[in-house]
Length: 296
Image 1 (tube, helix red, strand yellow):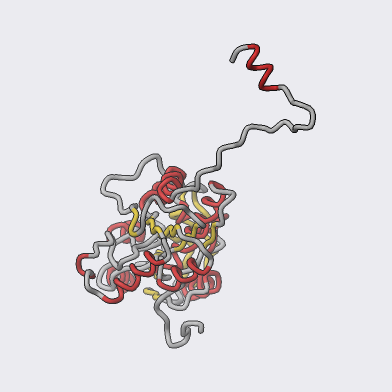
Image 2 (image 1 turned 30 degrees about the vertical axis):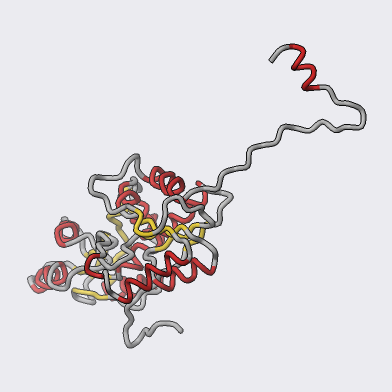
């Protein structure tokens, strides 16, 4: 800019107000941009063959609000729509299998209605599973330890996989867990009166090898896990107990074991987008027992 033009630009004629240059209108946040920022919050890059992908919706959709949840059930999606939140961050699959492969459900009425609801409300569904578990310490595991009131009992403050508590019976431990988590269904293997002190934790459904490897560690009395196939870790624990080994298994349910971690994720994401509405919506347990029917 020349000196003359600089001076002209600053001249204010009598009776006129100086008007600042108009600021460019801020572009709305697109779902894909929000997702990429969330991903980088937990891991520098997704692992190979990741399931952390968009499951439904247009990535270019402007975000009106963000919902985190353990699993985007129909009830969760309806509540998100009621709150006008259209970016759904779910930890578990939307369409009933690990990879959200929809080929089998192509003509299924339940699948079609769920997909239609997502499309009708201009939602974008993203699964945040692999990358959040890659963070260290694992936010899902740490949140479960906190929900159980065992943060001060960690053997290693940076590792949520083992805790040491004051000795109690397996029966008492289960009662404490149920009180802390409010679970409707729990499944337990082992002697109810066995004294337990050293606990391994494996939230979710980590599978036979990881669960058994945790349980057979020296000194571990009981494994707290989300779920397991009844013919795998369950029967291994039953045989171990029958052989006189001091081992127990507490299956608290997949949802109660990982929902606290996704609730923490809402807090993490809220810090990334302070001007956006970010909520956590509980998926709750799907199964119930005769003593604990679902709330109406």
